[in-house]
Length: 337
Image (cartoon, rainbow, N blue to C red; front, side, top):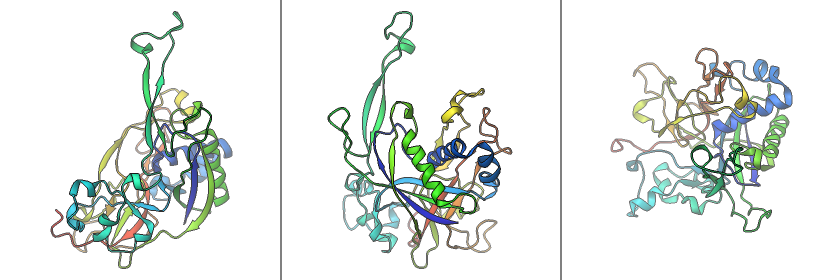
């Protein structure tokens, strides 16, 4: 497997934040629509929950930045700066990756300083008409707002283009099952149709600017992995004393024609670790698990499948619990508890 970087330009507001697991889900629908269900199920998803993914997709990251690791504050040098201000620094410039992790916090940028890291939220009014009265009303017919996320500046005039922002999506790809050219065509399909919620009314459109093979960086003497997407570390055997992450529950739902299938569009909730998680191998002799650090392109595991079904509508549904990773060297953690 090799890593690729796709650079995209958002062309419209997004109704769903483009995180790695949701991007992977829409990639699967794009495969089904372009190549057929047999290729998706029999060629690409075969072995997905046994550690053999055909693709592992990162979040859409601001170009030129890596997410700050979810390490406790004691792991960083604060240099006398205001702690509340430091907590807002969430994005490390790629050119600073080689410096010791202890210095990262003072070198990170706030979301406002990293273009594309802080999409602006704008409420969009919605309503449902009562067909008997021809108007809105109370209860299910009451007007409501839903947020839209603009990665560039929201255009002031209707029909005008948003200001350009470039986002990078890293994909660890098994080229024996899906070629790089096919991957680009599939992402172009998603960008043309729209990604996520309200794609049917124009949200989530983007253009694929480039696709190139890359080497995911790793620090010298690295001993831990930093994730670029939400992932599922359960059962992977990482060292709990040297692994750090923020958990969240994903209440997923099917996209595409899955919303119309009998059984409903909703999938079983799954517990994931947010992007920026840090996982370390166990020291020798400390129970079962990952014993030593080794360069990897991804960590985590595939969720769902026949053994642990996530959906009544599509029994074979899987969810990306893998994440592309960077290798980092953790600082001394004696005072980080």
